Length: 144
Image (cartoon, rainbow, N blue to C red; front, top):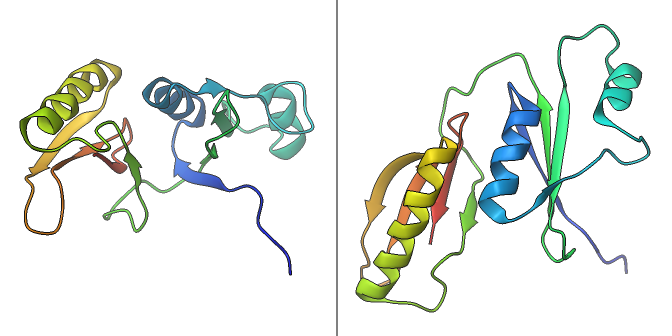
């Protein structure tokens, strides 16, 4: 039986290099080069000759534990809610006011990077508190 060893999460976006830098900063990742090419410019020339600006980008966990994030330019803009989103787990194991304080501190760190604050979902009988946010191109993610 085949076992999956790695997962890559792909984002459609307008500015792949910019979005890759944003997520690298959010997650403590590093902007990573393309696989099998020395630079993204070399990759772009091979994949999309004559296209304006970088059409792809990526960032990865320097420890190798987290999934690689891959960003590809698409012509259409985002128009509806994501069907998949990232949960940025900043307050795992925390509850109540301590959890909210950590989430709010992380939100404050991400706002100057271009993130947009969304709705704060307070704890209920089933779930702990989390904060819905958007990245620099409007993709939703949660701080939890």
